[in-house]
Amino acid sequence: MSTLAIVGAGPQLERAIGRRFAAEGVDVALIARSRTTLQAVADELSDTGVRAEAFPADVTDRPALHAALTAAEQRLGPIDILEYSPAPSPADLRRAPLVEATKVTVDSVLAQLDLYLLGGVAAVQHVLPGMLERGTGTILVSTGAGSGPVIAPHVANVQIATGGMRNWILNLHAALSGTGVYAAHVAIAAYIGQGGHDSQPQTIADAHWRLHAGRTQAELVIQDLPDDYLDRGLANKFVEP
Image 1 (tube, rainbow, N blue to C red):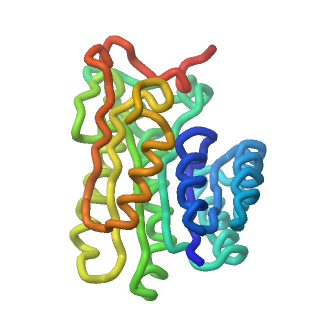
Image 2: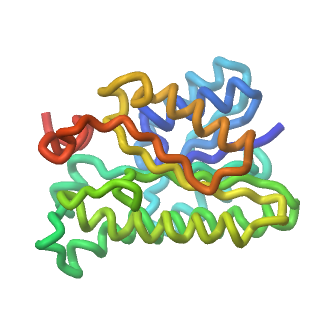
């Protein structure tokens, strides 16, 4: 039985991804900061008959992330599938605000690099050696489509970081050819849970499963943004109520 580790596991998209893979008999390790949220999702997934456990850790704390992934491997076995898709909370955005392209500074980029790029590198490099040794594995990294396919100047400091992550994963896809290990990037141009059919968490989760099962595409772009997305700004989950 395979094990999926979801790093940056939230209650919306990542919950749907966990449910989709659990439906195929895959065990699920959930890694993020909130133990309460993780445990609720783990309990829900466990009811489907797979093993699902919570491993709280902040992805910007590299030793904690390493410890969480190690604990997941000890409890659930080797990580065969990694899905990396962290997102900032409103509190994170107060501490490290999103910055428009003309106002980017070194300091405004550093926190975003820590979350999106360096955390992703750490997570991937934790699981990749074992995958290469076993000759099988899947790495799926999801970011906003401003990482490359879509222009989003109102969140330019984030896109510097996610653009770097996207570039690495596309190169990793090429470098892993013939090894049995597969890496792909998912670029999400959608207000998840707020738009049409293609914006719904379950639809995007289905796309993740197809990528894992098909193992051919280097990148999938999910395009369901309205024409006025630049005027609308952030998705609701990033806005204080």
